[in-house]
Length: 346
Ligand SMILES: NC(=O)C1=CN([C@@H]2O[C@H](COP(=O)(O)OP(=O)(O)OC[C@H]3O[C@@H](n4cnc5c(N)ncnc54)[C@H](OP(=O)(O)O)[C@@H]3O)[C@@H](O)[C@H]2O)C=CC1
Ligand SMILES: CC(=O)N[C@@H](CCC(=O)OP(=O)(O)O)C(=O)O
Image (cartoon, rainbow, N blue to C red):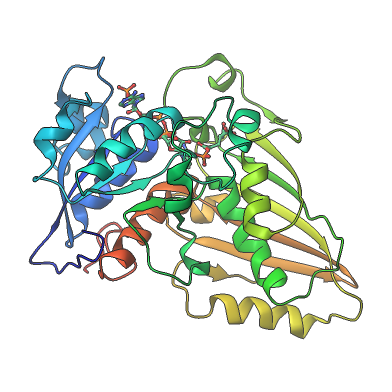
């Protein structure tokens, strides 16, 4: 299965689990418009009655009308020879439980949760609040920050988290080029729109409650994920802002003595000149410019050894669904951006 490639005439049969949620819904829409994939199934939780996707998201009436069905694990048997790829937009523990069932049936899994992102199982109790039940899968999973991946994707793909995507794309060019001072602990402050918390109702993310506040000091589950990506400690402080979608991450590092502006620019150019979803911009990035797009916009300002890098993404797109679609396109040999742009001819 994992060596299978596709063309727009032989579409990969795909399912979205969690299609009623925010990131799963974005994926369902992308799969429906991607000529290399077919949205064969859409599932929500077992407690929900079957209904059309466009009932849940009325703007897609006449565009994506697939039936969203309740998921139960016994469906796996029936799906085994009807499905090539499953995209999981589920809570972490639900993803962790269903993944081995899908893998056993030869189905490729793109997991949008954090269930398989960390390599060290001991970090799960501390940062996720549960003991990992399938630590053997942590070694099998490959983390799909595609701009920085230099190996093929296997059957189990772990899609990066939203905040880690924004700040890792900002910091990796400098770290890989060896420009950051030894011992520098990058400081990352990032603000997410409320869709980052998912569609379910909760008091702290309801309209009248959200202003702008920091949370998760030192304890957020994205801290070890970012540290794993960067290979060094960070101070990461997420914030919640009163807008719907987008993440703005401001990362601060100390450069090695004597590093000049040309070296910094060259590091970013070398990393991203050939990458279609990262835009190096000459202005301060704005979530309004990336909301609804699969791009990550990056800008930096230097003052001697101090460097501030600002990056902006849509948390539901480059931070979740578009990044999963990008990875699946690459894994199966479709054009990297197939399905990512509304109305785009592929
Ligand atoms: N929101 C974001 O910005 C990002 C989210 N992610 C990750 O993606 C995943 C989904 O997040 P998000 O879209 O925000 O979540 P939502 O809360 O919006 O949606 C979750 C979906 O999962 C379904 N679901 C919940 N439990 C189960 C279960 N046991 N079995 C089957 N289906 C279930 C829900 O069904 P129902 O509607 O019926 O309850 C719903 O469709 C999470 O792991 C999250 O960490 C990753 C990056 C960014
Ligand atoms: C605003 C908000 O609540 N954001 C979420 C992160 C978004 C998310 O779902 O995290 P993953 O990228 O790991 O899947 C949080 O802080 O828990």
